[in-house]
Image 1 (cartoon, rainbow, N blue to C red):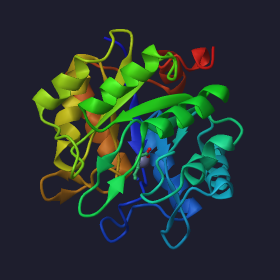
Image 2 (cartoon, rainbow, N blue to C red):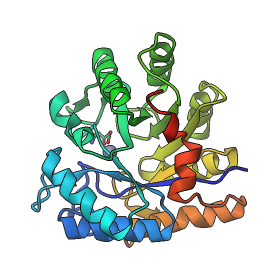
Image 3 (spheres, rainbow, N blue to C red):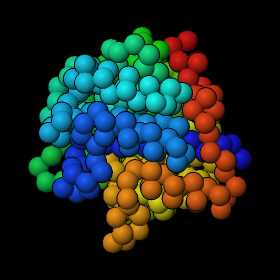
Image 4 (cartoon, protein in one colour):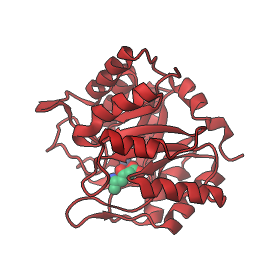
Length: 277
Ligand code: KMH
Ligand code: ZN
């Protein structure tokens, strides 16, 4: 089977140090979490940045500082900045990190979803087209984040109409409060919908993190874990840090004889060199 790409979502915008003390805020903490996740087996770091006090920001200069600091210690890692940012940010605020030189990959959120309580993460069809165009122009691979089946269908429609381009790499983000659950049947429904030449990764939120990871590993898909999505190794047992979550995925992968992709192998699997052509 193909090698397994592990993405680590080290920081997020919603989880805080009150939830888990290893959620990184400062640049030093971001580097620590990225480096340890990489050493544990992650080839991609999904990155949100914060001010030192923990406030989420999409500030370009802050991203630049974080990305340079990460690359200094792990130069070959793929850094995937978030263009989702935090709820309530404007589109251009969210897009700031893709203006930086050297960005090869970024998230593209493919539809709106309730985020629990009164919160709605808004991504209209025109927003998706706008983000996709910007990323295509900059030859940045969009990770097509889909929180439910309608988002997948919408991507396929926009792809047929020429607004979203090959290569297609989906991320099924399941288990968000207000979104689609992450049971096996939910995973299968999405997985069977995407074209055979497309690649995909799963990001299970909360208790769905490792059950979905196992399904994807068995199926030849890829996996995202990290404190952004889940803070527990198992019920009631906090992970020590991001690397701890990555290590658990590596253990599951061994069971199914999936070798772990290096960043360069991940670039090939995702066909990053074909982006923008
Ligand atoms: N923080 C969420 C509102 C992404 O990174 O693209 C959006 C999010 C998705 O985390
Ligand atoms: Zn994110």
